[in-house]
Image (cartoon, rainbow, N blue to C red; front, side):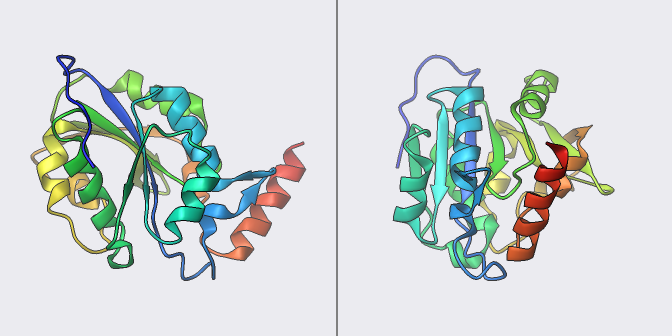
Length: 206
């Protein structure tokens, strides 16, 4: 997959990672529904809202079903044939696809259902445009996704393999990391019990 390059070098692409095998969940958790909406569709909808046509879905496990559930909301799609090797391979694929087209990627994980457009917009607004400045989300004493990963990180991301994910660039002293706190980033869906717990939280908030 390749994206058309134009003269605008100041573009951010939203990238939804939805390739994982979800062994702890027991099925494709990307297809699980929260408030009647599949997790992958919710993430894709946020990507479209924040970046419009500059949005990409990365699939892998149950790729066709996940793509259907995303309902065409992401303009581009990349299929990670090595999804079973871990998130690093999905990030590497996204970086290869975007290296000639994007100034940064806004990384969105399909399994963080409490992340909203306001937080994603704050990440984008905080990024200075520096190709070596990362803007990440802080929670539970760590920094992680969602995050703005600028062009300067793409070479390092392309070299990723296995399940370490973006931690390799967050820990690299070559990059400056700014963070925005959001406790909701700690709420992810890894097991059916997580999904049930989330449903109870949502009901209590109504």
